[in-house]
Image (cartoon, rainbow, N blue to C red; front, side, top):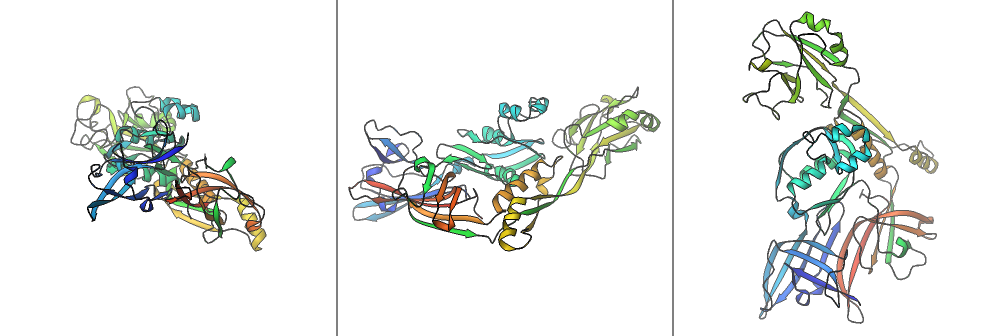
Length: 493
């Protein structure tokens, strides 16, 4: 039995009242927020559509009237309703946005320790089994899921993370102060040149690359022989933004050589300046409380490993200043509060006395500081290919200042450089065509094969944008026209 189109608002079928010529929807990978509009003509048959209702454009089984799985052309929320008149009828121009409109209903107010970007606890344990102790430390890392997953789970009820890719790259602590969810996700995504969007089933996609197949037969567009799956194919090669040697700078990474500082206490001072940006990775800073500066100097183990061994000295517990305890609040005994961005360490409660260490005692600090770093990533194969065409070195250099890459490791800069090279290392092939096949979505990929066009192409292409309209077929049934824009990179240049 054939399927049929259904347009619904708030679960009510409005299909026969929709002006088919008015249907226009844009599905765009880069903008992350899909939009569209329809015009409905009513004369009292149904209540008017209302802002906040769920809108679905989907396929239903003609016999059972049940929605066909994975057949939504659009799913989102009504955001504006404009009423006009035509004779005795009322015309409603309804604008809708994808479900990202509901993604921002709650604001993110939270601190996330330096931790992995995304993935479930099980995925992260499989990806980085050597760090199982950190991942299983749920007191510090929530339920052990990656930061993106935790944001969605806590602040976006009703949304799922089934297509959030596991990214076992650590990023520096993130503090969001009444930030929208989209801003929080974008802040993290931009550090790694990743993308995200919300699909028509309220599932969040967070990805470097996605490989969902298109509705093309065999997921391949045979441009020379296929006479039914597409039309009006245009292909463009653009080399204006080609960068195959990329320098990332303006950020800091962990210096492998530990530093030692000591401070003689006067009985009044409870805060000392370290003078350097300290690495916030677990174990990268240790504080010891010694009975004297002589005792500190005698504890050579502390000065080489950060572990207190001198009898009568105390290993301080490390905590985050302000987040784990502010100066105007009660402080835990023998706890050193580190202000990582201000290079300070505070020890206000020695041995439960609510006083700093007494006169003549000494504080020892063992830490790794963050040093200014420049990371270079390059694509040698792309350079050689361009050199053969141009008769030059084939090198195109580009630099990016990104302080958000500050981290104890080079994982984030390496990931960002790699993704930028995948995006820009070679001149990009892009194009467009029309297709009447159902099921097209931005983010899908397909193989473009031609011996005739552009001297021959056999590459994976990614759907960047799909503009959907409806037309009337010769036999009176409605078809969706998909205006597809694609490129050989999952990003627009």
